Length: 324
Image 1: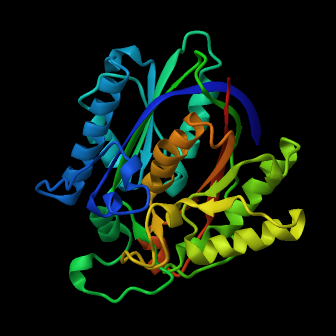
Image 2: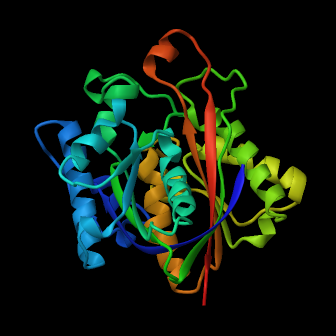
């Protein structure tokens, strides 16, 4: 389902870990630090909390200046979100859409801002490499060999302020994706598992908005890996011809030839980091005028994988454009 929305990106903040600092967009991140708390989960909570603190400083306001917060990430029962927001007395909508959470959060915020009583919404997401690896795969300490199709969860905290007051970057359209399951079962290849969800949402977004890939300066998927992104590009070109403006956030956040990330980056922070640091800066510089982000997610848990179930996927699209 597609919504025409009218909301604006006021400001954002992105914090990364050491590996993200060394990546291609490291210089665009607001801050990079090795959060090394007593547990991986506590480190992610500290990182998300600090991300919110830095955002509030950037826009010189307090948490009470926001009407609602929307947050989603990967932890069981959204523990990172809940443990972080217990320190902020603000109405909270917790969402789970796996690695596509940032697009869903921004899209929902854009819809809610159509209400007269809502002026400003905080949207956040986060992921921590070590806590995600422990939850969804074998912990790194086990020393298990990884497959080349696997991606590496990024360590990222991201926060964004969405407002109805006119700002340079306009959020104009939002497409909510469907859960797509084609029977794919390889849990070591999340990239290709998410391709059906990405294509379903991309084609619906193009159709509902009467647009083609040529109408955008940049089209991004979330974290389809070098394998999944190749399939998406080929499928787009079957319908629209040559597509030279497509990339994947998981291939932009890391240099997969130089950094040990196998098939690319993943996690909800991956698309958030690329959009809210690198892409935002390029849009404000006038180098990108219209951008489409199709953030992607696998809707599974380890129990379902161990039971030999397939891997449903989902994707959500948000369209951003520069307003003079």
